[in-house]
Image (tube, rainbow over all chains, first blue to last red; front, side):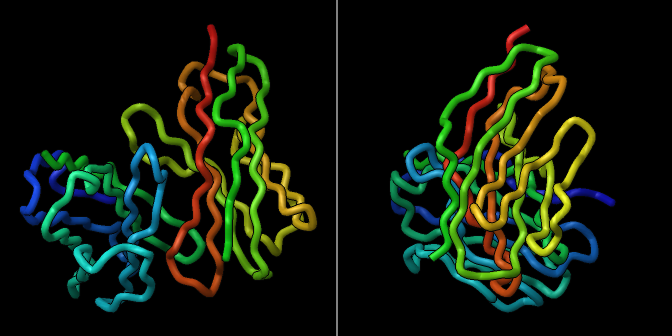
Length: 110
Length: 115
């Protein structure tokens, strides 16, 4: 089976812009979780989607949103970018009791 | 609230030797999973080993094994016959059974392997 894919791998944006990141899970997996990784805060859970519905949400402002499509692909959107949003964004594809990660999207906000 | 703590920010091991990384966690739930993930410089998060809380037997994957002490809420990772390719950041993580796909991570332990 193909692994988890994330696009794009790298992004450079300026403050105030918005960005959309994409994640395609492993075939057959219906759950996708998103995480933000920064040197200061470590790995933090953003949200999880299961069968097109948000099932879990972390403690992030409303500028961070997501959705999931009928083919289980998920997108994450960040609006009004701030410098502090610079991070590695990881998505994970879940089978019961296990999560497999994609390679991540490195977002730099200037 | 659930927490995961890794008290060793950095560890070092000689090639071919054995090293143990420590992890403690806190949860009031009885059904959960514990994981060790490896993140090399490529930043790809790789699943190393997984333990189901209801299983008393410690998980083993080739050179990697865990010491799961449920009562003490301790979950350490032992790497035997360390190889240069084992150098990476290692994260301990907790997944509560009835809370969907929310992994709670520790702060990580940076492992270096000396030739």
